Length: 383
Ligand code: DP6
Image 1 (spheres, rainbow, N blue to C red):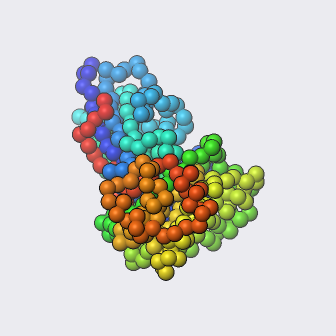
Image 2 (cartoon, helix red, strand yellow):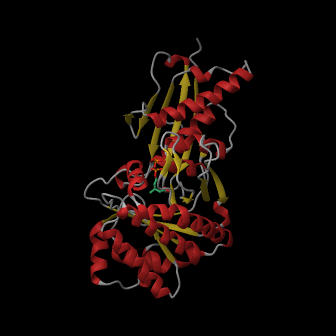
Image 3 (cartoon, rainbow, N blue to C red):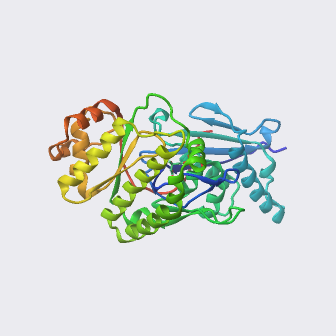
């Protein structure tokens, strides 16, 4: 038997939702209660690199995944669903063309690494599953349409389906019970509105909170507020923010982003028992953004929070001075500032003492980044 090692590598980005996915209508197929929309962040700052290999010489070994140098469990139902779907698509190609090597029956070795600290508590599952699906799809030479692959990545982790595209990405929740209409589409490429910036304030959490997977189902089952959110709030926010992105209307984009984050965290607080992801430092970041907007006399910054205390602040390049300046002024010694952040310090907006000291004491790292591209095939192999 040939001991050829077939190999493909890809990088995939992190995305941060501005209209949040929170709730499943089918936990097995990982179908959401609502559509969602995200901004793909630049891979220069945040990305997963994944190499997928398969070979007859691995025969007798189980499929394996090494993540950041450590063996990782892939027996979970979600990873298994992704591998099963990818193999089935490869098997279809192989039966149509008998000349193709029978890769679908060979064991897989997957090696994956993030370029950001895992301790940062940033949702790495989106980039991780997007990279895994893209790398194996490339290895199997499957048709490259990211929307088709989003149907597979969604089953690994819902938010992962949006990391198959760059720019501004919607996950259309769909209505079908088989989930075939629950997939990601690009609303606009990064180049449409390239001046979008994101400042991530990494906030240390005392203890790990409730996982998104379990938290969202507790909300679905116990929150009355959530029913109104999916019936009325999200559909309106999706329409408004898609138009705002098309029109490059930052004030509207920002208003929806902040109201969405507030609506999502209000539903978490309305969950019984309640779930609190934001902490005092997160709320101080909200006040800082409000002060920056008040000082500008218009909306130049928007906060959003996922299932943890980290703040993500979206702003446009042209407003870097007050946004970067304010946070740099509070956190000049914190890791992660890019060259040039310092020049904005003089534009810092003054904040009250309580807000300043919470931010100074609670932010452990900064990530200064922007909107970026989807998965990129690479010859930089990890194995
Ligand atoms: C708050 O995609 O992590 O980040 O599908 O169970 O893996 P699973 O959930 P996951 O949830 C993300 C929730 C969120 C909002 C969002 O990214 O839209």
